[in-house]
Length: 74
Image (cartoon, rainbow, N blue to C red; front, side, top):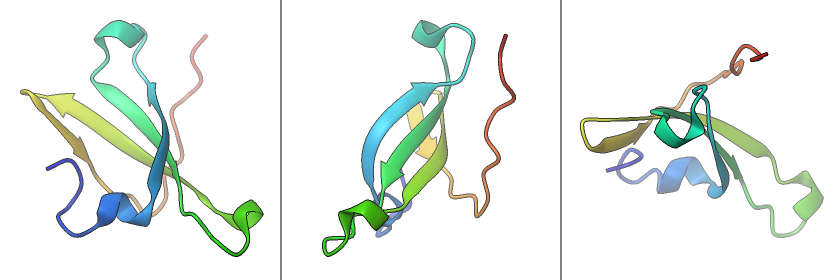
């Protein structure tokens, strides 16, 4: 199970998944970018950022009430 059962991927739909490690082809940490579709006002559909990790053949997404993002890479 990728997200908690019944969460419907945290009430959002996935827009993009971005690798966070230096080598994007061998990354095990990702940032899932999703939105919460607001049918009556699409411009107000909020974006959701969810950290994702992959290991031992499993992917998991954990909800964090506040996600500050990754430090910038140079």
